[in-house]
Length: 209
Length: 287
Image (cartoon, rainbow over all chains, first blue to last red; front, side, top):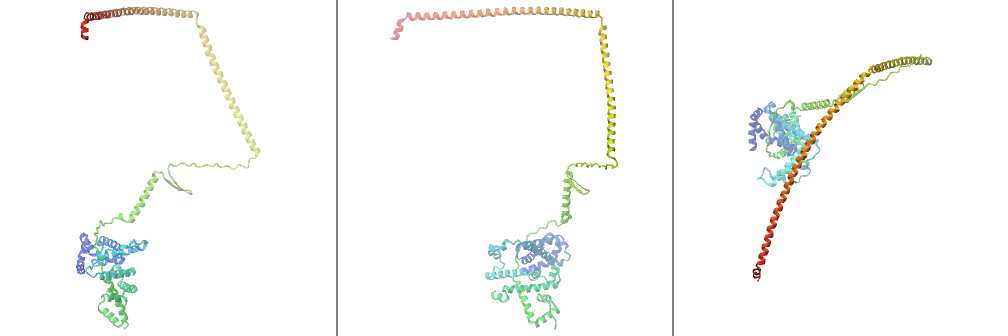
């Protein structure tokens, strides 16, 4: 239901983009509302860190509002927006690489067990045990994603979670479509190896679930 | 059949982005190659697994975009250049107020502050090379001749000054003696008669003056003595009056006293008489 509503909203996005380009602030606000969750989730999967994801999302949308008038083709808004997000993600990744400091939360986080993640679970009506397994699986998968190289990670997230077409990903990353596809192939292959190493296969999962 | 799909085609096929003939080709190839099909299925299962991760819910924070205009002074290069210019200006101003001077010339680079002090160039006197042609004897001769010249000129100038001095002394002496002679001559010219006249004049003046003086003082004394006598008589009169008044008052007081005394004695006498006259009554009262 949510997806369909979102799709409808996306349909209107074109007119929204046109209005936002003309400096219509409510239209810009709506665009932000519409795309914030997508960009946040992209950045979250890229870093597996809420604060960094928020940072990147905010920077992306500030940049979006400032640079909208320079967008030539309205049809390319989606890939254009992801380009901004990708650039900010890379910038933050460079910063993290550059700094030797490690977040204190990562070193020692006794509250992790009681993190709000547990409470704000989306599927409240589902079986708690199943929920727990779902969360554990999600954690494992996301950690596996983090083990991929930046290039592969970008492509996999965009394809798997953001639902972009290969053409759109190529536009967003400013590379050829074939490169995107081959990165996707090696990304999936790499993920499979990582999951095998973690002993998570279709069979084990089938048994657990 | 030599066809073998590459990774790109496999991915496009996997995500349903392959159409028409290309799709058919891949399908045929996979039907023939079991291992390729299995590996692709593995990739698909990974993709399905990834699909289990759900999106995180997030609320978009309000994003306020301020004035997006970019002015040329916001450019970092401009700011850097301006700040360098400003600091240079500051340095120049400080230099101006501190009288800074930077000079470069002839192997030296100077930075100086404050008032400039002129450095006087040290002049090293050039030593002329002595002429080798002069012999010691010639030099001696030259010295001697110059000494002789000096002596001569000194002698001549000394003599000249001596003469001048003598002349001036003689001149002043002559002038003084002339004046003295004239004075003596004038004094001797005064006659005896003139002197006697002068003396008698002075005597007469003196006599007159003494006379006047005595006359004046006699008058003054007379007046003074008269005034003194008058004052004294007045004083005596006053004194007599005062004495008389005093005697009068004394007499009055004495009279009063005697009167009082009389009255008192009368009273005492009368009281004695009364007490002596009525002895019984007093006794009767006692009893």
